[in-house]
Length: 231
Image 1: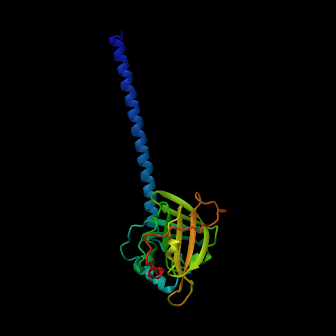
Image 2: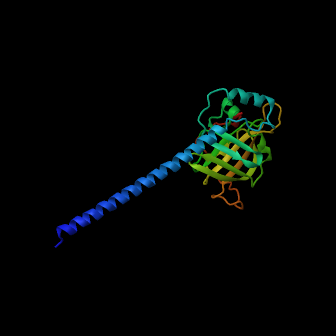
Image 3: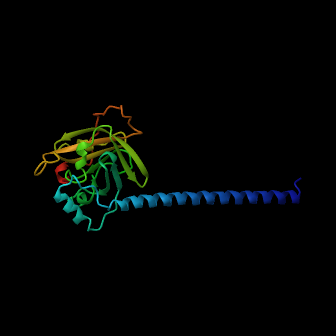
């Protein structure tokens, strides 16, 4: 038979154990919230930093002027930050592909995978602005995409040229990919007749030696779409 003294001692032990577990849980939660706050603050600082004038040495005078005017307007919330170290590009990925959006950054192509999610993310940019440096991008080059979920690294698998009607480049992919779209030729005078495409796949999903698959699933959002509207 358990004595009253033994029962009281057992209750004290249980109470202390509950306090220890509770305090440990609070400490873990506090540390988690602290790390989340630091991470979110870092992302916000990166997004704020993109307001600094980019390298415009290759830009056309018209695009430089358009960027200056666009920066005077209220800025939409960036969806991500696209970075291509080889061409020293760091630019906000903004919602939409209208001219004003592409004057101040690069644009998320509606209907493609959202930044930081599985599938094929389509991003459009001006050939005489942020995306002029794409002419120097080759297979093997690295691309980084910063989102609130973290940073993903991608490796360029191929570049090629298509007509404005060839929107199958935006079809869903089985792994996480980025498809960059701009007008081509880069220094064409007037409305460029073709589109330059850069396809990169997340490094953890596709080793450099992996071949580029030609298998495609039709994009359910791209019916009737033409790239001409992006530029």
